[in-house]
Image 1: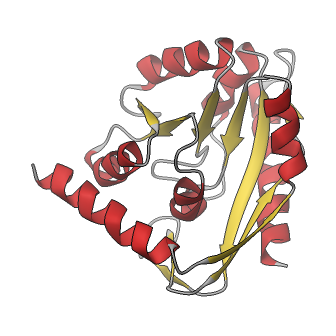
Image 2: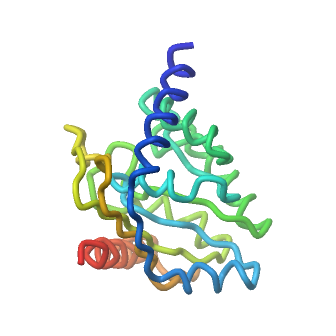
Image 3: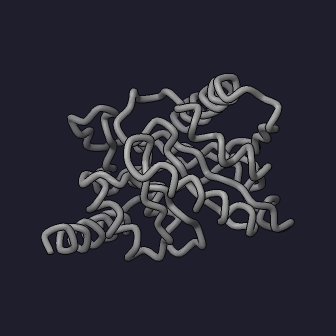
Length: 205
């Protein structure tokens, strides 16, 4: 009951905040190209950018991979209220079930969103297992980042960001990345890290 109420409150608070944000978006051609041709893909973003990006993409037909831990409960309920399909699981709980659902969505031509350094870090480090389902499904990865001109930074493992009222937001999509099954997972993780760091830096400009 507490998590349900907390998720509803969080969704309404962020929705009200979002009405004041001024958003500029870059690189949409990468996203539109995949959607136009019906190609499955995964959004990849650092966990600290999650809140403004989940708000911005509300209403999209995206399956969001969120932690099965209790600390993912509020966000999960808020995201469900914004129309997301949820895939609950992490590297430490419910991982195999989440892996199978990710594969199922991608093989059906759908979209998923993952935070490859979540749910508990280290921040900015891609876990090799996160890219496995995407490689097996032969899907593309779209790196995406969000930057806010002013934000509250939580005292969390990643400095989770909550943009303040009337903040300027930059949302940047990078070029799609294809990681074949022949690429070792550790190498695939390093490639994705570099792409995510690049879009994160571009968003700050």
